[in-house]
Length: 147
Image (cartoon, rainbow, N blue to C red; front, side, top):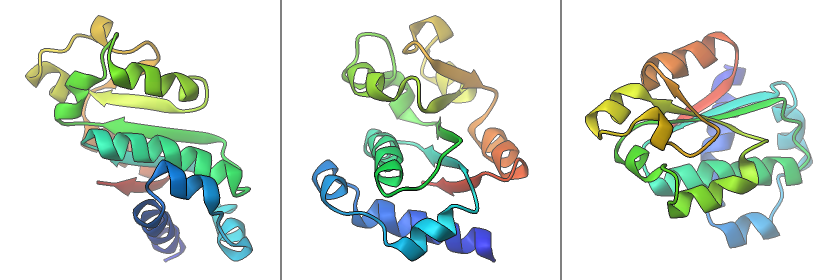
């Protein structure tokens, strides 16, 4: 039940404060921060550019609100995988998070979109499948949210 509550809080926060401007101005209340301190591992599964950027911005939002994060992972599937290549606009966006956030890329999506591991932005990690990686993170007690 607590896991569901935490996931709901993160979901509401992403929807409510998804823009960069909003996250810079608002912080989580003390009760929410205290609730989120029970889990220091977070993972968000995404399938488009907007949610990818939102998941990375969520990292900043949580940290700025005082939430302690040991591990934060974004798991990516879908057409956005083709945009996560060297020289892309998303490569520039990701640089700020490179040493803070793990980004896992679904190998099935890579294959369908003809994206090889050496084309991916440095620091992105291919995983066998998006769904299995999400299940693995849940098994490791990550607080997970998927889009």
